[in-house]
Length: 538
Ligand code: NG1
Image (cartoon, rainbow, N blue to C red; front, side, top):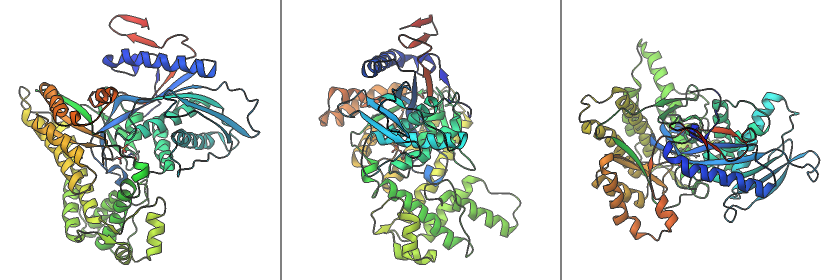
């Protein structure tokens, strides 16, 4: 899986057959608009997709493995580096950036000093996502080529089809494709997938969200036809996972709630607060369960201490003191942690800063500096019990889901029971997200219960939640019934535009990850290589 980001020679390398027609039109439109806006052709297109998460919600930033897959919707950046330097300030390079949806996302021109990319995370501005990819990529380029490295000017036209705030990770698609575009524009012939993912994770944190690493990994590493098992320790790794053949066949449906969840705006009470609560829970459990003075390892999680770090430290110390020769399985460790959390973190209404600081043996000021100064959070009490219970039990569900996928169903004529076991784990995730992690909302709950009644094996929110999208594991024969039930009981009650109605529900096929398409060696319309009928240019 590791290795360079692929250079696609045709759209058939990127999209599934059913998507090619629409995508070829869209790409040709992008390239034609580029020519009109900048008066010259684009040199290349950098592409990164959105993702849907199958299982493993809100555990990536606690460094537990997750199972997402890329979707067809993506972020495309058409780029040329042929920019006249006449009116660029001395010691600066120029970035001209426009969007095909120019009314919603106005064009900008920036003169950026060689040494630093300034991002104002307090302003919600679409180009911040490009700038954060730019900043991350330039840091990497400087590490490779030295501090005197002079970035190239770029003119860019962006086309994004991942709905913003829809839980399908539009931001990671945009940041990853931006970082990729900057690397290629600055002459990198190959871009390493792991390096790109790691820089996109860190870059995205510059836009005001303490994000985990799932979205960027899914966006960069995914392979067509497979889900992706992403693990974060001891280092970032991703491997493709295929679903066994089942009967009835399984389909993933993604359904929009049309409740927009803006992580940037609600971060202090939702996403960023959860990140803080999980790190505080790790520190608290460490203080009450490990020997006095035990320090948690500083890791790659947003606040450098994680529940996974506590998990590893706790069992390493246990094994050491008992002289055990054989480690417990991760499953049994997680079960034990669920029980220990329920016992040791017994305050259901949450813990105040003073209560936590006293247990950690630090002052409230120190606590604030370490845990809540990076991104502001608003809370009187922190629900450490509920957050840790969700994380440990969700990490366990991911392992159970993976072991089902690896086992394959026993009775291949009728795998209903096997399908139901997979679905049941998704339903448990939804229950935990709704009741324990408190990241669902009534609209998502409604979409899930309508789908289950109409035949879905498992239904849950996907992504950060508090709105956005839901994912459903549906037998192929029930897709129509589920769609109709949603229309009747949910969508018909909303005031939706034609465009929204069309985008409300999609059948999701696992798509491929980041790619670069070089335009300058293939003038004319984008190449689509129709493998059944030989090569063809649209
Ligand atoms: P969304 O907001 O759906 O892209 C967010 C995080 C993920 C992960 C999920 C919850 C970012 C960019 N993404 O996804 O890392 O934590 O929530 O599982 O912050």
